[in-house]
Amino acid sequence: MIDNLNNNINNPMNTSGMSSGPDGENMFTPKNIAIGVAILLVVVALSILGVKYYKANQQATEEPVEEVGELPTSEAVDSTVGGTTNQTVTTPPKTEMSADVKKKFNTLLANGTKAFSSKNYAEALKNYNEALTLSDADVVYIRLHSVYSAQGNNVKALEMLNTAIAKNPAYTDYWITKLTFLDEKTESSFADLQAVYKEGLTKVDSRTKINLVTAFARIAESAGNYAEAISLFEYAKTVYPQNVKVYQAEIDRLTNTTK
Image (cartoon, rainbow, N blue to C red; front, side):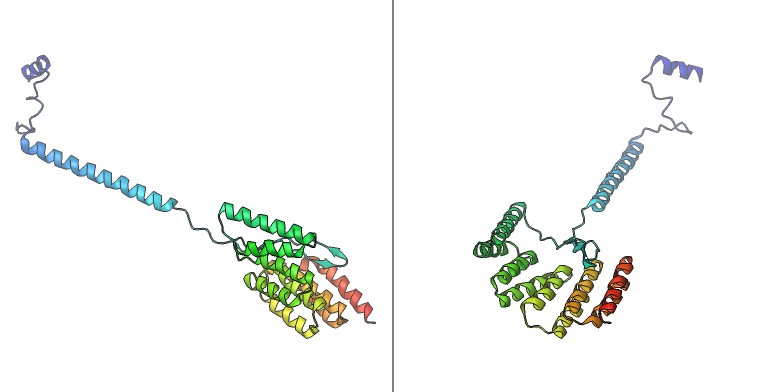
């Protein structure tokens, strides 16, 4: 054994002493080498498949989710009660469009609003109608309603308003605008207004429903229907209990008015 060890030391390339099996059989036979290479190839193949599976699984996990259009958002605040006005901030749904088209659309709306403020109704209509060719959005129809209403074209104004509501029925301000418009610009009866109110009540954003309730309470009061106004303020206390003291004060005021 010592001689064999010395021989390996003197001749490092000699592998005869290290390549023998338990029975002295040479382990580095062509057959054993072929088996070893085959096992190695299998291990490499499995590793490659494992890496590909991991990457595919990771990619599927990181795949972006398709965005869903935004619903109308608003702050639940009361409108005109007790002589005070709290601003209601409500954002209509966004219309998806390219950056260039969106810029042009917003410019047309701005130009139309500027023209409307200057009572240049023809120019306002021109800008708003051109905006409609870019986006059939409710925000355009409600502006068209304002123009036609200012011109005294009540039929066209109501048509535009109804279209805006049909496109965005959850937007509370549209229903309030309709009630106000019908009350002031048409011969609608209180029963007609009540029907519009009840329809809107089932469709508006629950966070701003209170604004519709108090708005109609004001219309009922202006029509001399104090009992209905009191009933509406009683209902308002359940819809928006944060303002229960304010609504109770309105109830007390209306009750004293009827005495």
